Length: 246
Image (cartoon, rainbow, N blue to C red; front, side, top):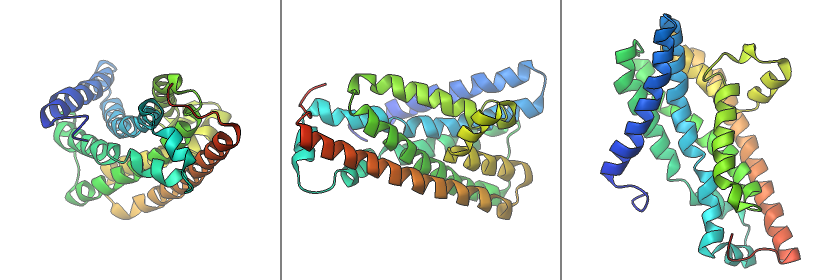
């Protein structure tokens, strides 16, 4: 993490950018003249900030190929997936910190307030978002390893798809049923609903089913990511297609 950011660049460059982005969407609600829209868009975009940072694991996974270490990892006798699961973990605490600062420090300026118990549970809820969506990012990263030039395209496009289908920007029920079904397999869809309930009702017990479902889906995505990395490694060993460049 220290290689990527300094305290100044993280606070001003990254966090400042995210705050402006969340404010931009909240102001759309203001233009609509709806307090509900302001709160809805603010919370959705603040949680998406955590997701976006976790999706940085997609390009950072492909850095192994550019650095020339991927071929060595594939040649090693051990499984490939544990290396990549641990390789980009720095994005998780950063993403949780970003979402927490935006929701708790900036939120009150837009009428987004939290009860004491809700504020305490907010960080674990964002951690569920980070960990479960990190699994989604790893699954996509395992695919992008075959075409690393697409790393930023896949990261950005997938973030936009999640933003649209998870209920961050518009309610999930506004989409056709088949797109709603796609949204339901995204862990953040359920974790975001839990965070909205937490803010609206301040009742901690009401959020556990949604957070539990998000964790369960995240576990499924981790298993899929592990299988994808294993397949990539076996295929690379068999065909000799893993090189040291992009």
